[in-house]
Image (cartoon, rainbow, N blue to C red):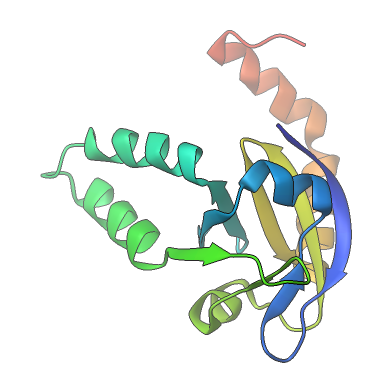
Length: 145
């Protein structure tokens, strides 16, 4: 399980250090792809396989399912660590997430997310303002704290 929030920098070549405890759980090779809300999703190979199976079950005749699959899979990149424990984030993904210098790396249960620091701070602030409201809506999904 991935937990926590960490601040890191991305260098001019697009390399970013991922926390050691995340690297261990991600394994030697993993998938980086477009995420939601302007971040990148990073999946261990096993989680990516599960997601792929779920995506295959979506109706191919539904335009939204096709669009989501196309964007998710076309943006995906198989990655591995360099000797310093960094991942080289492909240029198209850096542009998508607007990663420039300062980044926030967070653990979200089964995946890691990489955010531009300012984007994360704004998203986190807005979400914190409505945290109670969001929690109340989760009751509809039979979810209780």
